[in-house]
Length: 178
Image 1: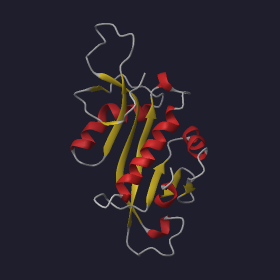
Image 2: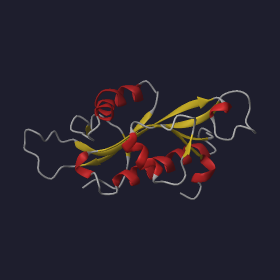
Image 3: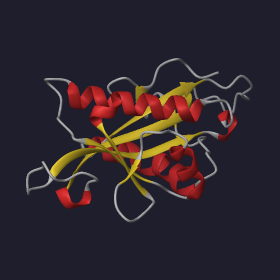
Image 4: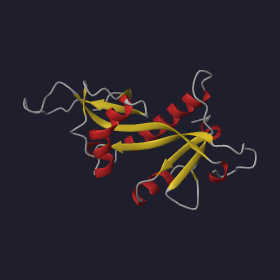
């Protein structure tokens, strides 16, 4: 069973190699790039750890495994790319990119996808609304596939970012009550 708390990825305490959400690109990102990108200060990955109940001694490294994860990064967009650009400056505006989100197959269909998404959105909101944080107009998602698009569309607050239906946006203001 997963712990109750998402934590920053710590490769010395978390076994990322066992993660399998069924999507190679999401698996590969966590396994190969998440820690490297954090070390380069490009983004932050947060994991929901768990300890498997039945591990053989050969499989038990003393590390927790990943039930779910998400990655946040900063990005800028031109005002023309945003749903309501009328009051925005003519230079790029900051947004937070929800760059990755994955749920291990062992936890599919248990509500963990919604829990992870809500946690990521709340976290992004806290970053943007904190006086000591980094301001951002909203959150952007580059959606991986049709299955992910259906998942995100099941939440009422996402707007299309562009003519591309695989790019979504949620204004920070709409997350105040989340």
